[in-house]
Length: 348
Image (cartoon, rainbow, N blue to C red):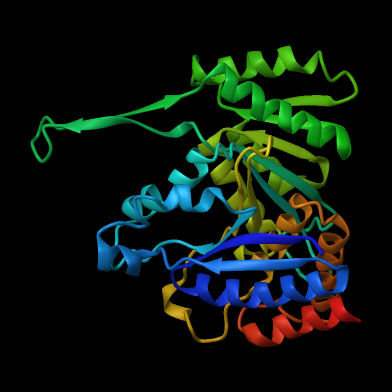
C-alpha cells in the first residue's frame, strides 16, 4: 500500500479546527481508495512565535523537505503578532524555499451554494505567480519616524519567473477550455507589466490552440463581477493574483469555499495546500468554522500526489453535502456536521 508523508501545520485560530476536520475526510478517502496517509503535526504558529521568538525553528525548512506534501490551516493572530511577522516568518519562506511558484485557486459555485452574482455557471482557474513580483521583499525604509522618512518597495520580475508561470497557465488552459487571460496594468506600469505582456505574446506562439486575452487588472475586476462565465484560466502576478482570488472567493460564495494549492511543478520539493481564509481568532475552537475550503484544498493535494480518483470523489462528496444545504451558509451547520456529511457522502 502506498503511504504519503504529510506535514500538518494547523497554524492559528480556525486553522486548527479545519485541518482536524479535513484530515478526517482525507483518511476516509485513503481508506476507500487503498492508500495510506502518515501525518506529522508541527505547532508552528503565532503562539509558537510568542514562546520562541520565531514562527518556525531554524531547521524548519529542512524538516519539511522530507515530506510528500504540506497541509496548512491558517497563519496569523494580529492582536498578538503583526501580520508582516507571521507571513514573512512562515508562509512566504516555505513558498520560496520550495519554489512553489504556481498558486492555483479554483473558483466556481458548488451545488446548493448561492453567490452574490446573477451569473452562476462559471468555472475559473486562477494561476497566481507565487514567489517574486510585488512580494519579493526587496526594499527598505530610511529616516524612520522623521518627516523625511522614505519607504521603497521594489517589485522583481525575472524572465524565468514570468515565463514559467505563464507557461504553467497555458498548459492548464490547454487541458481545460483553451482560453487564457493574462492580467497586468501595463498602461501604468510601463516596465514590469509591459515586460509581462511581451512574454505573454512570445509564448502564445507556442500554444496556437489556446485563445489568449490580455486585460488590465481594473477591467478584470469588473469582468469577474459582470461576466465571470466568459473566463477560463486567469494568470496574474503575485499581488494582482492575490487580489483577484479574494474576489473570486467572494463570487463563489465566500472564503469558506476558497481552496488553494502552492505547487512546485517539477516536484523537486514538496507542495503546500491551504484554504484561503484567515485564522478568524474570534470563532476559533467554537465548532462553527466551515471546513469546506480546507477539504477542497485536501482534494487538490490528493490529486497532486497522484490519487486523482480519490480527489474527484472528495469533490463529489463536498457537492453532495452542499446540494443538501449543508455548509452553504455561515453558522448554519457546525464544523462537525459539515465534516460528517462529507464523510458520509464519500463512503456512500
